[in-house]
Amino acid sequence: MALRWIDDHCHLDRSDEDSPSVEQLLASARAAGVERCITVGCDLATSREAIAVARAHEGVWATVGVHPHEASGGLDGIEVLLGEPEVVAVGECGFDLHYEHSPRHAQAEVFAAQIELARAHDLALVVHTRSAWTETFALFAEVGVPERTVIHCFTGGPEEARRCLDLGAMLSFSGIATFKGAPEVREAAAICPLDRVLLETDAPWLAPVPHRGRPNQPAFVTLVAEVVADAMGVPLADLAEATWANAASTYRLPA
Image (cartoon, rainbow, N blue to C red):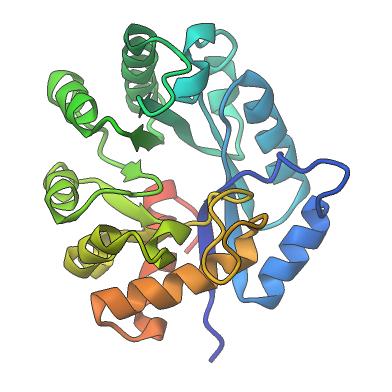
């Protein structure tokens, strides 16, 4: 039986004139067995676009949120979008102290507010954390962790993985798991239980080996899967079944 996959984090609204169309990206994904995608909002405009893409394409759902880079702009207009039927999560939100495009206090305020929105609307939470594990865990300790929380593009090692798992979060692995210089991510995958793992591309960024340095696309989630399955020591078919079920329960998708 053919394996079926879901890319639980991509940005289908990011195409420009030189990029493949959403239709082309989804056709390539389906040809690779990637039957579902979740396209992610980073501010008000991209959240609206994510909803429009999800509304127009079968097997696509959307998130609505404000990325830490955009935290200075606040949350105006975000909450009204959370009731749209295509929306399955709040985010991506969190801390990014690698670039710090928004001040830390603004990132913390907007992150905490989105945690509360996820709770209030009974939605999953999609978390971005870069160079900010200390700050992320401190905020979780202060305001709590929604029941359905995804650590997107997990870049930590086993220690961070254990702490996230202890908080009840899901670990979503991206193409970084395929990078030669990221053994700690594969070590984290090795300790992740099958019922807590998700797979993503973060397309059009972070293309996995052997496509590194080129635009990413949802079809490539299968390449992430191969590396993660190897790190976890499980058959590829078991990982496919688990990630499909995990995404369905986390985002409340049809079984």
